[in-house]
Amino acid sequence: MEQKVAVSRKEHFNAAHRLFCADWSDAENKRVFGACSNPNYHGHNYELVVQVIGYPDPQTGFVINTKDLSILVEKEVIARFDHKNLNLDTDAFKNLNPTAENIARVIYDFLRPNISASLELKIRLYETERNFVDYPA
Ligand code: NI
View (cartoon, rainbow, N blue to C red):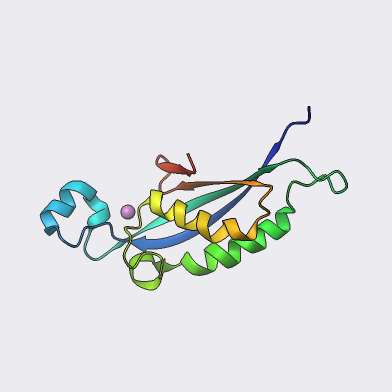
């Protein structure tokens, strides 16, 4: 039986954020979120891997055209987040902590409606070289 193929597109964006719970004191936020709770924000160089999984089209041999995927990620994600303050400049994180977990989920929700339902979609987001999340798990 024919196997599915996973196609990945790697992108990059720089963004600032602050992780905090508004009901907590600065000290409590610092204890839980560490440097990521700095009240004056700080930046990360996010590395994003968008993976699309499915059967290659018998005619083109493509699971998805990576050029189309690149344009989609640029429009739906990079244009929204690159060089932005995620807390202040984006609607998605007005009331949602911009953790890597939540950013990955928001990115998934931006992309999912634009990719054929016959294809699986997975998001991997690196907040640092050592810390990354996968959504869905
Ligand atoms: Ni941070």
